[in-house]
Image (cartoon, rainbow, N blue to C red; front, top):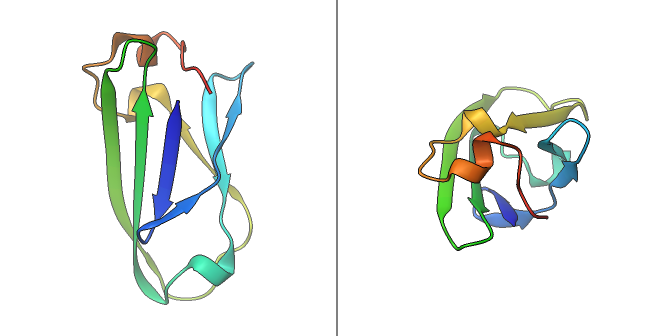
Length: 88
């Protein structure tokens, strides 16, 4: 499973099975002008979790291009993440 949070609020991420990645299309109404916080928590089928956290600056409103996260972007104690075995 996976959960994404933008500035502390849950946001929808979609799992692309063929590409084995999750994505989020940013909604300008949830973005702060200036610094924004993004957190993605991924949990495998046996309960191991990995967390990816980053911050980014938004000087102007962003376009609605999707943000992609590969399993390799997330620190792994979770071996299933690197093998693309993420259960949505």
